[in-house]
Image 1 (cartoon, rainbow, N blue to C red):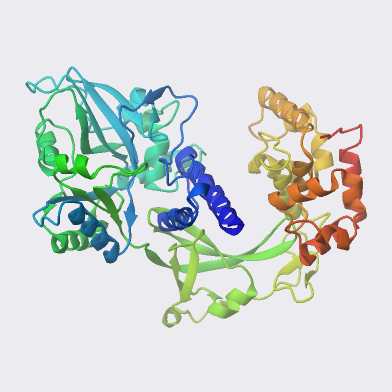
Image 2: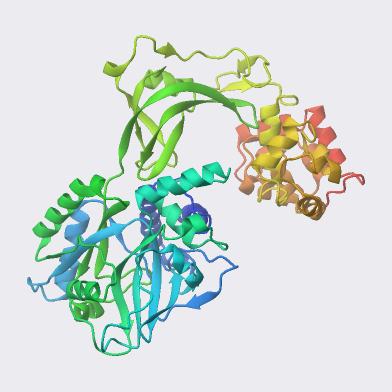
Length: 586
């Protein structure tokens, strides 16, 4: 039972992290398929132990995020997500359940439509005028983005020329960006030295949810309606398919690729057809949506807490791409591990630009027999990051270069060593290697460590490069004049950063332990260590036997912790950080 609880907690942590990235920061670092796999795995575990299901579980609610700066709008009915399927057998199971709930009546119609990869929105018309637009948010409460209506090119503001339409009704649909606009906007952002969007979905979400919209974003988004959610009088057809067609007469945009299907064979034929025309579309789709067409039947079938039982998304398999390896660089982590990274000729897979692929270590390079100049197949299927699947050897050029094990660190030129039977290569210059200094500082200021707000990657990199602060001690000694030497830091921001440094000194023991960056010591182990020892001196003087008795700390981790505190420079840093001069306390 405890094992299942741990697995659920671990999965929830992963899912919430990716929800924050996807819905809150308009970015993602895993494929949709991988995310759906996490949800599926969570459902299986929760089914085994229902008493471990929490209210904030994504299986019980709709994933989403609301920016505080937006006015909140409560949805009249929840904006739910869709249940997903990737295989034919899952669709067959869905149809079978629909038939079973309706006494196996065979003449049920289904409406099939495109699954647009964009941002779900609610659009309310009042007295024939566009009244409100809001995002899905957390499903119950969304963000009011009405002021950004000028970004959506094809959504009518006024419906006055149409007679007898309801005085109040809500549409739901998808806001998305055309591929040509995506290229134009990223080009403009690049010219302004601003962060570019990494996918069409993120571009649509990031643009519409912008606090201060830019002129160049005007008319760069589009809208397709996928449902009439409610109206204050009976007006629209009872067939979902016919109601969408009717909306077209009102000048409300729908996608033309909708089809009424009589059976599962027609559904699969539609799926196959859309899969074939996918590349020709000027917007991104990631599958089709299958809905029971009769709205009365939809109500009868009902809803779960997070999705309608009468609809399902039939998603396309993750794509693969073919590209060339331009070069292989070596990145140095905060613990000194050298990681080979393949620099690729950029390709887009599922709307995501991929130009770098982690090769992990030389065992992986040897397994794949990779050389610089090779043509390779890259996939995002089920992986957190893109992965090279294989080398297409028939395309190997005559001048392809072997990837050699470096003898020296590419950053500090120190000798590289392999420790015992470890498969990794290490730069042992932990004190003076700039790459390690940067990564250690980034870890030290991170949210789960000292939580020093405002010190992002760019600022940390410049602090180290300009020799202003290369370690935590120097970071706390930083002054206003030093910060003003950093690009884009003005007096107001500099003062804010100094205040953030001061505030962070009041921390917790687990955070402080985690901030030290002890190899193999993550957040959970940091909490277990803090609970076991209570005081820093007891931890510093602990022997391997004592360390090994801590929960989740085995002999390997015990050795890492023990030898960390044997290094004089580490002890010097700790004592200085908790001294009166700097004053970190908990």
